[in-house]
Length: 172
Image (cartoon, rainbow, N blue to C red; front, side):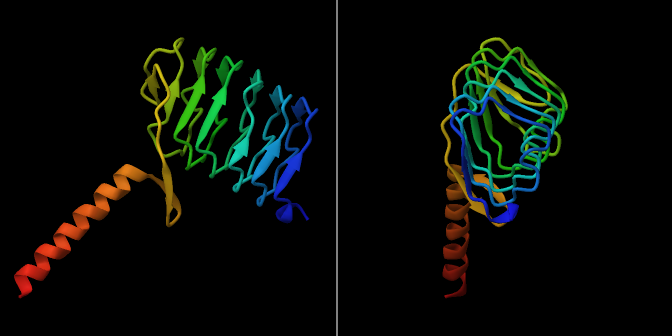
């Protein structure tokens, strides 16, 4: 069954066709060193997908990675364009690095937890993502049903501890 496949190893696959991986909800890793293209909805709904080598991808399509909620950081070496809804509802996505990235659709990150950091020397700042010149290092921690940047989470925990200590002092 599609739901129980945890990883797929296909080192020579160049293209994932339209909806090819749709419904592989448990898929955590897709391994191919030669992947160049992901078709329309290629990984649609692969909610558990967290590791995929996208470095050689040159073409993405509408909803290529839609609803892949565990993807956090992606590094594209050859991609020039990210189309509409490509990363729709990828709630864990934090950063995309693309040295050749020239165009990012205004609807590329529909229903994501904004802002998404996009690292590319060829892009101009936009409202729908933050442009950086070099990658940001972050550690994500799953809390409930969403990823939270570890440093922000630690600050919130420490603040809560201070409030609890203050309340305990007042109650004495």
